Amino acid sequence: MNKAETLNSPTKTRLGKLDVLRGIALIAMATYHTGWDFEFFGYLEPGTTGHGAWKLYARVIASTFLALVGFSLVLAHGRGIRWRSFGIRLTQIIAAALAITLATMYVTPQSFVFFGILHEIAAASVLGLLFLRLPALVIAAAAAAVIALPYYFVSPAFDAPLFWPLGLSEIIIRSNDYVPIFPWFGAVLAGMALAKTMQHFDALKLFAGNIAPSWLDRGLRFIGRHSLAFYLIHQPVIIASIFLFSQLFPPAVPAPREVFGKACVQSCQNDNDKAFCEKFCDCVIGQTEAQGIFDDMFAGKRDQNDPQMQEIAGICTQENMPQ
Image 1 (tube, rainbow, N blue to C red):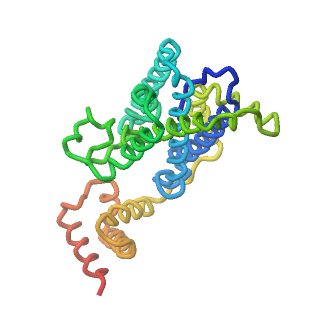
Image 2 (cartoon, rainbow, N blue to C red):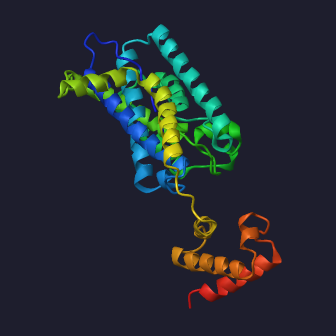
Image 3 (cartoon, rainbow, N blue to C red):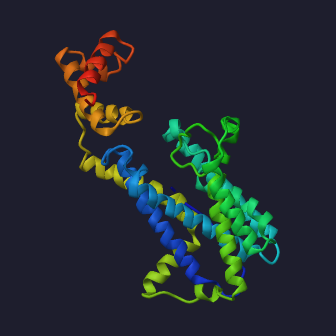
């Protein structure tokens, strides 16, 4: 999830509630990453944070960050691009994105972050400059188009890794944090359209002032004003904390039968209903245990091309097919 850094407003009176919103979004991001890290260490079932309410939670957080990027881009450069401050901030974000890529290549090489939310923010910050002079309605229409495109158009022409940042490939991309241009740049454009609309109606004053209690306002503002630093620091802190926790209270290690059963059902459900898959996988486990080959199967010494495994699959399919 991650995960954002937005550009500061050049206005004389800082819109403090925008910092509060960033702070809230960062805290939400940290809670999601805490769940992801607990899953990584084995305290939650594999895939928990990638489905259902957890997945929705992550998307809301990412959308909020990116909308704030667009909103702040208008506030900072809507009356003229401040190239020096823009370049400094962009360089910081690119450097942070590269650090994330290198770190995840080392920790999780099979699913490293090659175009996560920081990469998206860097790209969107540059692309957003092209829309600064356009009316809010035009930007909003562009936002809708960018969000809708990957749901209606994907092509094998974009399957090469060079094009993966676009998000228009037909293949499934494996990455711990994948935030491609389409559809996520649409959230940035939506934030830009909102900022321009609020400027038109003189509604930016809604973000002025403080929230209560004062200690919460100060804390959230501090986090919001140092969002990039918070993003880079929070994950190592959470991971280190959970690692120490795991040394005192190790996660329960599931039995091989349970591990295989879950993996079998998940794979089977790609082409069959859950009820059939659960019965089929229980049958396969029972048959392999009865024939003394479960350990070999679990260790990968026997696969679906093994004649004995094919026979077992055939028996279990026939026994559990709906009548």
